[in-house]
Image (cartoon, rainbow, N blue to C red; front, side):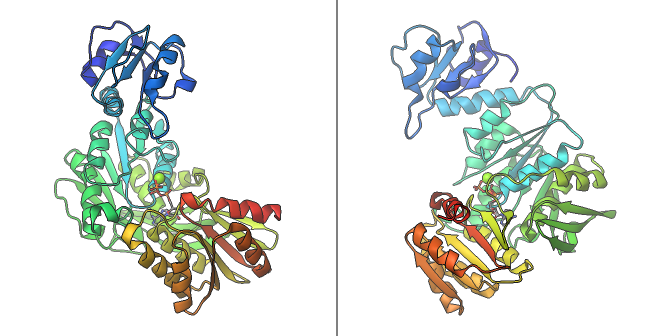
Length: 451
Ligand code: ATP
Ligand code: MG
C-alpha cells in the first residue's frame, strides 16, 4: 500500500478529520500490526476488534477506526457508524488513485479458478495484483485493493455474494473496467428464490462497468447466453460451442492436464492447462478472452495458462500406487458436483470409478432434492460406487441406487475409509469432494496414512 494521510482517510469514511499524520498500511489483525499502520477494528463472530484497540495503539498503530465509543487510552481513534463499511470506503478512495484496469470475476462456481487463470494470463503482459485465495467478500476485496502499488497495471478481483446489492457494493469499491460471469447456479438460491434472481444479482457487476466495457459471459449457461446489454461489449465464451465467439474445441485430456484449441474472432491457437475438466477449459477460455481484450496476443495468452497453479484442494490429480485420486475437497455445490462427475466420467479408467462425496451444505429446503439429483447424476455418468458422508448424504445414496448404482452412506469417516480401502483395486479412480465443512481431506489423509 502507498501512503494515505489520516485526513484523506477521515474524508473517505466521514470521520473526524483533525488528526495529522499518514499511514502506509491498513490492518484488521491486531496480532500482526506493522508500526505506523491504521488499525480498523472489525467485529467478527468470535472476536471484536474493539477489544484490541488499546493494545494496537500501544503497540505502534498510528490510528484506529472504531464504531464503539470506549476509553481506548492513548492515540487517535476515528469514529464511524460501521467499521466494515469504513474499510470498504478506505479501499474505495485508495482504488480511485489508480487509473488501471480492474477485472471483476463473479459467478456461482468457478470464481477463484477463473480469477487465478485470468491473473496468470494477464501477468504475461502486465504487472498484476489479484485476490489471494478466496478473499472475495466485503473484507477480502477491500484488503486486496489496498495492496495496489504504483507498479501494478491491472487488478483481478473475485467477487462473491449471497444476496442482492452485494456485488454492487463490491463493484462500487473495485470499479471494474472488465467483467466475467462464470455461470448461474443454485448456490444461495435460498436467499434469492430463483436462478433468474441469482443472475440479476450477478449482473450488478454489469451495471458497474463503464460504457463499452467488455463483459465476458459463459455462453454455455442457459440463462447467461440470453443476456443482451447493448451498452456493453458482451462477449460469450464456451466449450465445443461455435455459437460463442470464443470457444474451445478439440479437447484432449491426458493425465492431469488438458489440451484444446482456442477459437477466437480471427484465429485459433493451441493451449494446455495443468488441470482436468471441461469446466476448467471454460474458465481458461474466459481467461484468454480477458487477456486478448487487454491487447495480449492470443499465443501469449494461451502459453501463459501453463503458469496457472490450482488453488488449494481443487481437483488435484494424485497417482497413489495403482490408484488415481482426485483431491477436490475445497468445496461442493450441485453445480460443481455435476462438473466433477462429468469430468470423472470422461477420465480414462482401467478399474472402477469411485465417488466419495461429502454432503453439500447451505442448500436449505433444496438440500434433499439436490443430493438425490447428484446421486442420480453420479449413476448417469458411469460412477461404479458412491460412498456418501455427512449432512444429507443419504440422499446421494438414494439417488445413486435409483440409478442402479451401488452406494452406502456413512456418519463416521473411519467406517467410510475402511469401506473405501476394501473396495479399492488397481486402476481405480477415486474422486473425493464435499462442502468445506465436511472436511473430506481427512478421508484423504487417512487413506494415504493407511489409518
Ligand atoms: P466459492 O464460492 O467458494 O468462492 P468459487 O466460485 O470461487 O467458489 P472455485 O473455488 O473456483 O469456485 O471452484 C470450486 C469448485 O467448483 C472446483 O473445485 C470445481 O469442482 C468447480 N468448478 C470450477 N469452475 C467451474 C465451472 N466453470 N463450472 C462448474 N464448476 C466449476
Ligand atoms: Mg472462490
